[in-house]
Length: 257
View 1 (tube, rainbow, N blue to C red):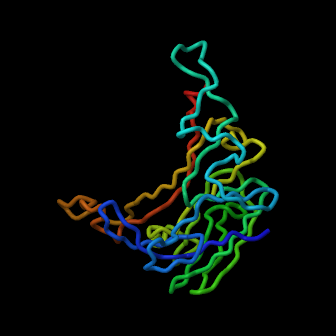
View 2: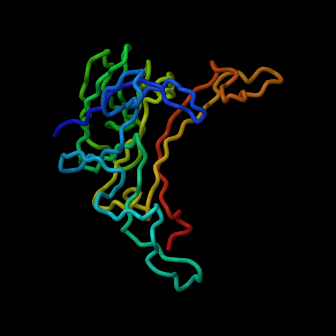
View 3: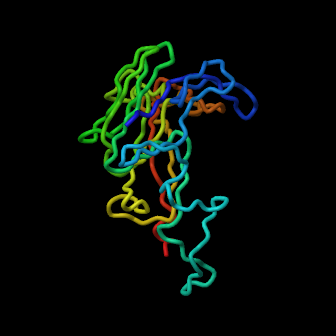
């Protein structure tokens, strides 16, 4: 099995007002910092049980993709006029960039090349034995390392550059804030419409990558709001960034038929 190639790149991305803002990311090819189209994220890839890796924005791979993202119902609900029954085990789910999908029983193999001028790393949080982290360790500028491990149990996991302390990625979140993050979703291909061993069953699922700020030090100065109008904390030394990856099945339990 050939590993999936990821490149640690940096570059500038345009904001809604046209301003260019510096970012970093795990791209699929090497690009220059001042290049017009920096590769700062990877499009979804699927690690299959048979050892192959395929590019796909949807999963299950052979499931139908709803037109315009709107799945047609199976039939009208005879017990609830005006409502409809979902088409079970039929529709594919659509996943965003930065998503890696692995089937249970598969092997995840990734070759990471550091194209920046400082040490960096790739680490999957809670995806190793006993829910420990698994990663490349520090990668020197211009060097590559290959990370290979068995897909963990079903669920959603965060991958990132863990920063200065791989044992505690929350302690130094600056690399993640700059864009060196993504999500790993592990699914069972024998029951791809179940969210875990015991369900629940879903029609489609969404994957969310969240960033939150936790204030862990003294309160804001008297008379000053905790956050400025720019969204920057007024007491940056007392704030920490955390990340999480999670999936959301649809329909929610109380709406299923």
